[in-house]
Image 1: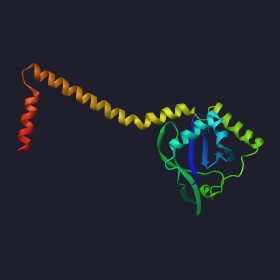
Image 2 (image 1 turned 180 degrees about the horizontal axis):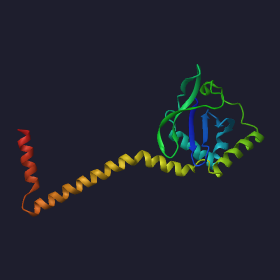
Image 3 (image 1 turned 45 degrees about the horizontal axis):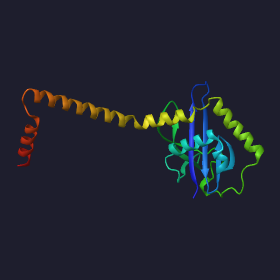
Image 4 (image 1 turned 120 degrees about the horizontal axis):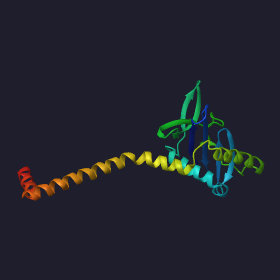
Length: 198
């Protein structure tokens, strides 16, 4: 069963915002990579040979809601296929539907696995376009995006841990104050436990 993942980024630094849509469809021995509306088929070794592309692939796996399922919507009375993914635009917010730009009316998970990889001329052309996007800073460095994603996901957890630490410090300070004034806090707790159990 093929897996599908998507990285979608909107760069609002320019006057006309530029959208980058990179979809990875993984088959048993090949990957189909769709960069905006250009599609290439590459082997796993070819994917691993490009550091930037493998980083974007790992990021797409992290951001995609469900890699085994294709999302379906209706647009202009036609069925359109896409991926539910977390979009980066000045931070990560929630999952949104991203349409498969190349052949949006065909389910990419029903397609047959490629028999061979894309020819070297087209592969160089599409990879040059990808590297120009990456070097032209049309999307942020994947490592920066990993950091932003994990910060966003763990922010609430860190706040909860910080609040728990503050609460425990206050309890410890109150216990020390009561102990200094001759009130044993543990005997008060025992009295409370005995009275609540009976």
